[in-house]
Image 1 (tube, one colour):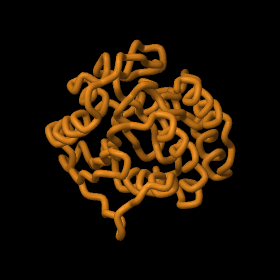
Image 2 (image 1 turned 180 degrees about the horizontal axis):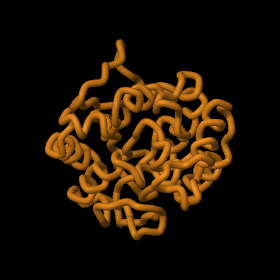
Image 3 (image 1 turned 180 degrees about the vertical axis):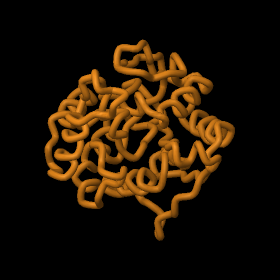
Image 4 (image 1 turned 90 degrees about the vertical axis):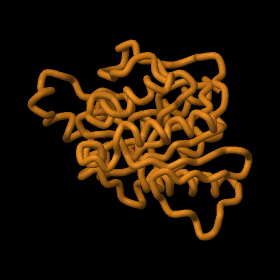
Length: 235
């Protein structure tokens, strides 16, 4: 399982399938934000991160231009991560509540984090064809991890997971259930799909998504995932 995920990560990092995303992520890495002008940006697709024995898979939208696109690790170095990782820490799924950069000591236990799109997109909006090109990476991660629970952060992640489940040959309800915060769906094969508003600044700073709301969904996701396997993580 660990070897499969390592191969997927390597394939993600070398991907140049979407010209618009390649140009944008590399331009951001060159021009930088003033606060990070002395840092070397990652500027490549961002692979999944976490426990290779995870029973819970968290799926986001895409790397942030000056967050994951800078640090090279999912939800690391931006406001979304500042909301997500304290919640994972409260839930016993992360070793610390902060995420600054790879090598900072953060370890996930029983949890793996990925995204529907692996490159930072302009305006944080990947195009449908770009999501389609990224979809095989999510397919492969689901096959490698075989999670008991999947937590989709936002409508794009929700649709991406349902599409991945359908591609794998499992039955998906028709019409496909629409995204709504707190939705819980039992999938064929024993996996539970849950939905939460994305942990973006637009949701968390406006009060649309509060820590209490997210903690409640995360508790349900952790319960659906069941007892964690012995912790093995890849910082």
